[in-house]
Amino acid sequence: MEKEEIRKLFPYLKSGKIYFNHASVGPMPSNVAEALNRYAKQRSAGVINNYKQFLLVNLRTKKKLAKLLHCPAENIAWGFNVGSAMSMLAQGLNFKSGDRIILGDIEFPSNVYPFLNLRHKGVEVDFVKSENGILKIEDYEKLITPKTKLISVSLVQFLTGFKIDLKKLGEICNRENIVLAVDAIQAAGAVNIDLKNLNVDFLTGGAQKWLLGLQGLAYFYVSSKLQEILQPSIVGWQSVANPWSLLNYDLTFPNNANKYLTGTPNVAGIFALNKSLDVFLNYGLENVFADLHVNVKYLMNKLVEVGLSPLLLTEPDSSLSGIVSVNVQDSDRIKEELAEQNIIVETREGLLRISPHFYNTREEIDAFLDALRKII
Image (cartoon, rainbow, N blue to C red; front, top):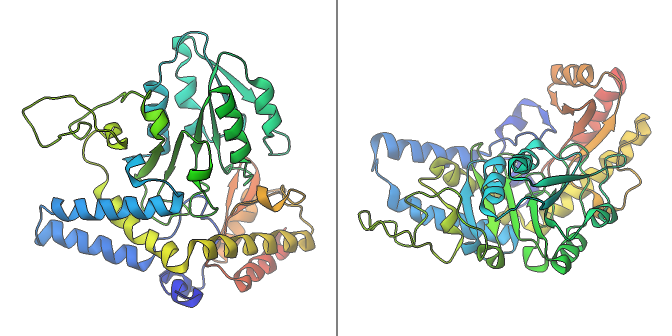
C-alpha cells in the first residue's frame, strides 16, 4: 500500500489533528475499528459463540506477529500487560537468596517492580546508572557477578527514546549464562526486532502503542532454551497440552509457549491486533522503519533550528527510535497549549516527549514546529 492509502485508515487526520503521541497510545486505524464492529455484532446478534473463528484469527495474528519479531509463532503467547508478563518471568525462574538482577535506573516501572518483588526471597537488584538518558552496555557488564542471573532492559527507553545495542548485550548475557529479558513496548512497530539474530531469552510488549491496537493485550516471546527452565508460575485450563480434556486433570504442559497461558485471553484485542498488523505488513516493515527514522531525523534537526536540543542529538542513528525528547521549561504548559491547537504530544518527568509514526508527514512536523516556536 502507498502512504496515502495508509493515511486514509486514520479518520482523525480529517479533523486536522496532529498526533505525535504514539509512545503513549496509538490511534485505532479504521480497519481495526471495522473488525471490532464485526466482532461485536457476532457476539451480540450473530453466531455469539464464535470461538472457532477466534482460533483461526488467533493463529493468523501469531503468525503476523512472528513476522514482525522474526521468530517462530509457537514461541509467542498472550498476556494482559507488560507487568504481568514480566511478573510471570520473575516468578517462574528458580531464584535463590543471593541471586542478583541488573536493571537500568530509567526503566518504566513495569520492568522494575516485578523484580523488586523478589527481594523477599533474598534476591538483590543492581541498577545501572544512566548518563543523559543513555544506558551503556559497558556499565551493565561492570555490574555482572557470578551471582547475576538475569538482566532486564527496554529495547527503547520510554523517557528518552534511547535504543540499546541488544545484539551486543545479548552476546554478553549468552557468554555469562545470564537470562536476557526485554521490554519491547516502545520498540515493536517502530524499530526492527530480529529475534533470530539476537540472544534474547524473553521479550514482551503491548498492542496499544506503536502497534495501533487495544489496551489490555500483551504478547511475550519465550525462547526454546528458556522454556526448558521457566516454570509456569500461574496455570489455568489453557496451560496444558490437552485443554479440551476437561475432566482429565492432566497437568502436562505443551512443548511451546502456550504453557504460559492461563485462561481465555483478550479475544477482542487479538481480533484488533490481527488487523493493525496488516497496516505494517501491507506497507512493508522495512518501509515502516525507514519512514519513521526519516521523520525522527527531520524532527530532531528542525528542533535545533527552533533553539532546542533533543536529548539524543549527538547519538548515532542506531540509538534512535520513534521517540524524541527535549528538555524545556514549562513542558506541561507547552503540551497544553499545543493541545489547544489540536497538536498532541506528551510530557514525562519534565521532558517534552514527541513520538510521530511512519505515516505522519513532513508537513505535520513543520506545522508542529511552527506552533512550538510561538509558545516556547
